[in-house]
Length: 555
Image (cartoon, rainbow, N blue to C red):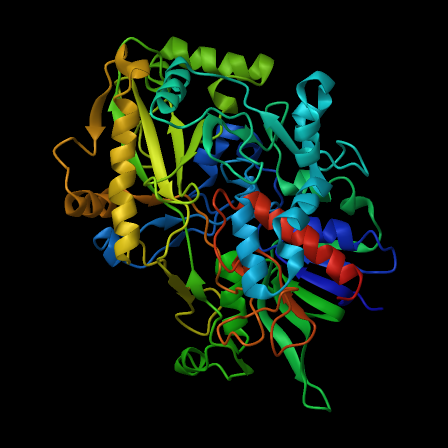
């Protein structure tokens, strides 16, 4: 076998790709090539939890995408971070471990016709790689918790570490009590299948360091296997498809730009796209697989007309409310004080704790936008800090931020190439707040934020709404305001969605195989038919675990 021929080629060494490389290379007879366009994850800010501030918007670690001007955001464009390094988005994300809701997966099973996606089945798949801190403490994990989190075949020895956060804040404890007073129950576990409640998020960290998928699944295991080849700085530019004698179309290779040279690599068994919800549909379209009219308009010969490629984009849009407070410590006051900065640094240096160990959000809450909802459709991220916009300096007054997002948006967007050149970023159009339902939920979510802030538990801190401002009250005012201030929390999914054979917009079958092209799968968040009701990183990892079993068994 030549150096350019492998059994399996995986495009993208992010969340899904890293796990796939690990699992598939367990077979010593399967030669695996893992391609990553970005560099190795040896940038120090990747590994310090607060370092996401220095990774997002940094060409060393981020693709630097932007959305198209969005009518729902009153014409604004948003920065759209996507990980560009080993570990992908797990190297720059918020590190929150959230599975979503059982009903998310019951719906997937319904729309795909595949019972493997039902909650009971995905639960066992989540557990296969999970390593939860509470299982290290026998007295802290009862039988119910073990049923939800323990892998009984391996114990708590999975690769994907989940830990509690290494700091608490008085103001966040008070917000949690206020949420309970507002009717949201307290919870210790958002991952039971019903995430309703308020509590501190658990995070993918190990002893105060970010735990990305490169650490979990590539090092040292894969890097020491002779049947695994990892190329960094290697961008896939085109999929190679051939017409078989019987008329079938097959993907059997990838064109790659590596070290300034074009290289063609061949796959004997399969090519797997794990480049993410933006780059996977882009690569398919550049390769002639996608909506025929779009391809022809960009001068690309149509290999396979697949209209759903790049459609069905869904994302979580958060609305940030800022409240000034009095008589309590927040990160604003600490970070603006020289002694506070020194204390922050010393805490992390000696204990791997304090603000430098913080995830972007510490306290979470899941609730309903109105009582008639059968399940929670809002997620709160509460932080002991405030700023005008991401990347801007912290305010010089004590404050907290309560961000809230619609977990089950009805708005749908798209990802479309702008040209036939792979270096040109695609047009990313989420179409946020484009439905009356999403606009009403945005308005109601701000009202619920205000309701929590008005509870007795917060009264001693005298919360004062700084943004958006109490002058905005009507549905129309609040929806328009949401368009002015809302931002993405970077959960794009659905752009290569799976579905039944009779669904003309389904790109993949229920086992993530591209319809009409043999030897090709997409295994990343783009395969989700609908977005999960929570952060999307760990569900993507679960999907890769599921796909790895199917691929290994020839399904």
